[in-house]
Length: 232
Image 1: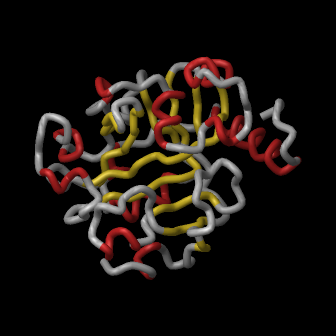
Image 2: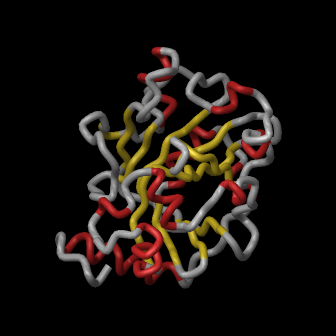
């Protein structure tokens, strides 16, 4: 973004993303029809768009079937119903009575899996983002954290079940994949079983400042993918 002064590399990255925006297309339902652990790293670099706001996804977490940290463990309820729907829909829930958490539903009907959007980088609509966030900064703290993403996009639980592949509303657009990916344990799931607490199902763009804390738990992802470092 032109207003940033945090380093030449960041400015160049922002310009590249904006140039590619006009050529980006909405991703089809088939893009989401895979295990959330496979989908999660592929979401990095993709673009979320609502109205004039466009965000580049920089950090995500995968939530899977039989995962003691996943809302799917509760079964189908009025809140979790979208989670068990077809891939490509939004699953939005309220956390701590105030934060709107955006998840992208993965896999097929009845599976109960999704990817949480943890952090993003602003591509366009900075003024709208700042207004919604009630924060005038253009530093990474603006969008590093899942509650901040929901606020920046102006989401409520009414968006849960919204198809991301249909024009209008909230869309997921294609974008450039990052050159490097980091992986590590998910955040804030101490209630889950030990194997799921330690599973490295959190993914982030390597070298990107638009990533939430903690960062020390993130390490370089093997080139062969996430399944090489976890038990399937």
